Amino acid sequence: MDPSLPTFQESPPGDRPIRDLGLRIEGTELEPVIAEFERELETAGLRRVRPRFYLSTEWGVPFGTVAIAIPFYLARPDLAALHAERTGLVEGHGRRDLLRYLRHEMGHVVNYAYRLYDREDWVRTFGPITRPYREEYSPEPFSRLFVRHLPGWYAQKHPDEDWAETFAVWMTPGLDWRAEYAGWSEALAKLEYCDAVTGELRDVEPLVSDEELDEPVSEIPYTLEQYYRGAELDPGEFPPGLDGALRSIFEDWGRPEDLSTDAPRRPASELIRRLGRDLPADVFRWTGHFPERTRLLLRHLAERADALEQVYPEDREMPAVIALTTFVTALAMNHVRKGSYLA
Image 1: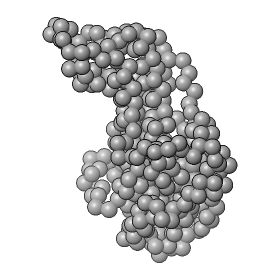
Image 2 (image 1 turned 60 degrees about the vertical axis):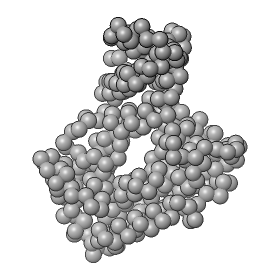
Image 3 (image 1 turned 180 degrees about the vertical axis):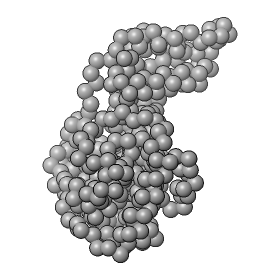
Image 4 (image 1 turned 135 degrees about the vertical axis):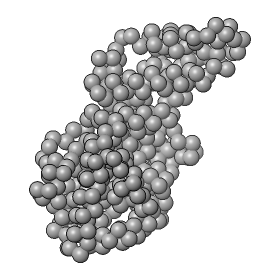
């Protein structure tokens, strides 16, 4: 969990419907960031499209609207802390990250407001918006076909996300995207297209101004506990063969002196569970493997380490951390690419 997030001083309000928690944007840390974002829009010349901001269950823009949904847990530090604890990732924690997500969602707003997805040149550049939208996708890390903005190589998920990520990079203040993507001909061509299209639209009234909301926080009937239980992934079956890897990490240190150290031994499961606070978010950023899945994988590894009675010398913690991080990242990459950890 991010150490800058506060922890609960008392039991969270898990037994009340979320709609009864009195959550709103006004008077929270979200309000000045949204005001800053609106100034960014003015600077970028996007004065005709005025998005509506509201709290909901997750980031998003309902198709055909100009309404930007912001996760409700960002309205209160204690709820953000709970979200980090339950999922391993807070999307939009802090001013910088909030602006990053707002720029992405604004890309969807512009797309829908002007129905760019119907333009032949947009389809040639990004692909048809009718392409099936899959929650799980197999990105190609460091592909030069796409820009990099949100974690998990998000531009590779769908043409609509490709445009939104491209727009977000284009909109980022102070970023010299031409220099950043020099040599990335395909990604740079998308940015040049975005620059040209937004230039065309600066004095054009949008075709769509619908502000219909999708599951606003004032209407969410379930509790926090129900929300997080509903979001839990089925762990499925973890493959055999992980026990040998754990033994290799915690028993075969590679140098005779490591085996003879007199340092106190610590439970390997303790170290694995500690990694569960921050590793899932980092693995997601560089592989696209969902944090929830990484947390389940780490939980399984910790349970197996306990069953195998694995320990490590206290003075060799850093090599163990490096080995575990590398191992988990390799498993995550395999799962993203092949749909299985050891296929």
